[in-house]
Length: 490
Image (cartoon, rainbow, N blue to C red; front, side, top):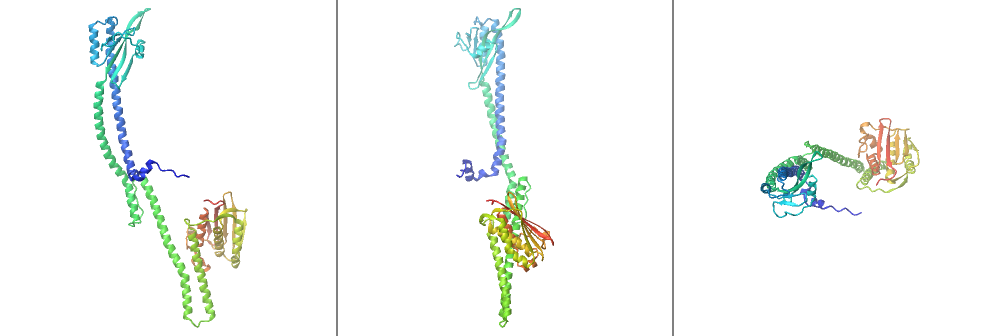
């Protein structure tokens, strides 16, 4: 598969640390929240003012031309345009609104143009036609800066005994919006100045508050650095935000876990040193005793040499168990997975251990609910069964029993190893899988235990993505339950 190439923004973030800063994101967010609404508000107000001003100007112009429309009828201006009064009114209106006025008669002919360039021409446009139908129109051309409107010249006539309205002509007028544009420009400049002032205030406020908001995270970093540098090993507390509480809680849990691991490591080193030193001390004592007795009988030599051999065997067992633990480390362990007949593996394991059981008059019983085949590391699983069954035999009572039960479902196989032994006190249940931990140290020393067997067993189970549980009553017996997937989970 091809690796997905990072995008441009991700590359920039990698090159510019500032783009990955929470403070930067808070600053940008607060800045956007502060400035964008003010920009939208400014644009909205200016647009609203422009629309309102244009509407008022259009209404005012329309009202004035409606009055002139009545005068046009009274002076019969559509037929005779020589009236000086009407012409003066039209010129006055044209100058007042800095626009142009066209008077159109019923034949769509221009009878008056205040600009004096289109008189006698015919005008047929959509707006004029609508106006002759009694529908006035108003259009604002913001690009060229004027308002264009049509005003019907309506005459009231009596027809069939009823008074009706009849459109005799149309006034096509335009009015300049330059004054509105000038006022709008002034407002825009003032709004821009106000917006700049607000932006400066907002930027200053955002810088201040973003620094305040990010300060708890700086305290978290400082506290973690103090722990890292060894100035303190106490739990840290930064309760300013829920987020900092979560970070601090997670760090404190990690710190506690590291303390436990460190204590465990120190205890492990001390235990290893003690366990390795004890057999060597015994060997030295025995050897010194022989050296001090050059005339000692042969029987004493043999007895001491036998003791030395046993101590060396014990030392060798401790070293082998330590090597097994190292090999089973999760980060380094190599699994040799194959399909294994679990029934056959258990029977072979019990066959090797029954001689030990017979010496203590312990009966070993194997019961299989069904045939089981699983993908496992045969050596490690054999070690699991051997350690658990051997412990059940060694820590049993005379004339006792050990029962091994094998069962499976569609996903896991389960092995229960129960005994009638001395049992494990409830207080020790959570410690029995720790390295070198012994429930009864004197009895363990007596039977040659190293305190590493259950730790090795647990590691081997975890490497198979399985679980191991213990239930025990002191003085009555113990039951270990091992559950391992039928298919190895890689």
